[in-house]
Length: 190
Image 1 (cartoon, rainbow, N blue to C red):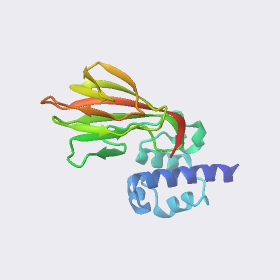
Image 2 (image 1 turned 90 degrees about the vertical axis):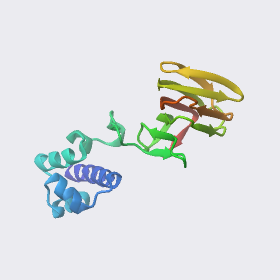
Image 3 (image 1 turned 180 degrees about the vertical axis):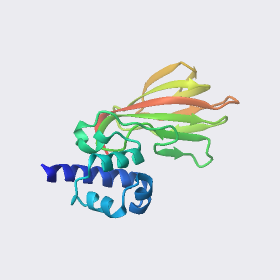
């Protein structure tokens, strides 16, 4: 049982430390746990006390239970404002921020799109059967799908087949924000 718990905590600690880009030394300072102890936990050679595990969890801003459940048991993944993988256009006018973890298999993805004034973002056709659901949260977005143009204001939504060329535009003088749900006909694995 101890080996199973040690392996579970070890795997989680490695994953969280890698994701955060933290050295053992930096995590040691953030958590108030010695570098040596962290190394032993990460190697699966030591099962930490609840106090030490709590300090580590606080450093990563996750519940202690996160370290004691397998990937299939995790029910909540929080993406904080300012975090999440971002893709930016070369001119910086278009930013797409992933609002989901890049782990495991999925058929849907959720993004926050930010379009600065004058932004035009063209997307080539996605795989057959892919759909998108775009909801404008702030400002206005012009959606063009296979030559059909739709003007969307805050609160408006559009659902469309994304296996054809499409584009998002912001012709206004204020930034626009939208949420985009992409759904694939087959699972995508990260």
